[in-house]
Length: 264
Image (cartoon, rainbow, N blue to C red; front, side, top):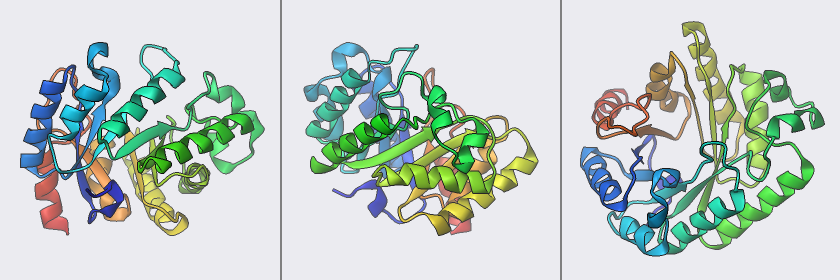
């Protein structure tokens, strides 16, 4: 089975946000029929009774394509060790990739920013730890997953608006922790900043040694989600349809497929 980084770009990735495995499998099958060739599963949304090896194996065996485990913090709960163990179970069950946030192990990452003078610090990012002991612990965690055969995407959902120089600085910091893929999500509150995000994609393409995704949330996110892969981002997330748990900022896969058939 391939990893995310093995596919031609842009890779259309189905985003699965469900409460139980049967619904997750149904969504995977629908998104695969739409054209998705990889999937992310938001494990944090599954009911606790389903966060087991057996249930993860059922999900993994529902497709021949790779699945990435995501298990973000919810409702202020910061039990990172427990969430990590759940992701280990997902990998043991057949998930090919994991998403590790750059705040992992740090309950108050913003208070660590004074420890660095990197250009991205000026943007006051809210989800990246700069504590040396935390960075070392994250590096060791990535090695553990990679030793199991998992591909590791390291994600930085940092809020705010950043210029291209700051984004390159952030991307290099994330890459330095041992990531296989860099993921950066910022905000976009104006049409003018859309252009700066696309410029940031081009700059990352020249600066990084590994694949990356740089997109945004906010009022003007939709333009970026479609267009970032034209400027260097390796993938784009989409839904089959919008339901109760969907992230409605993510486009529909059928729309993405039509767009890339025209542009590639």
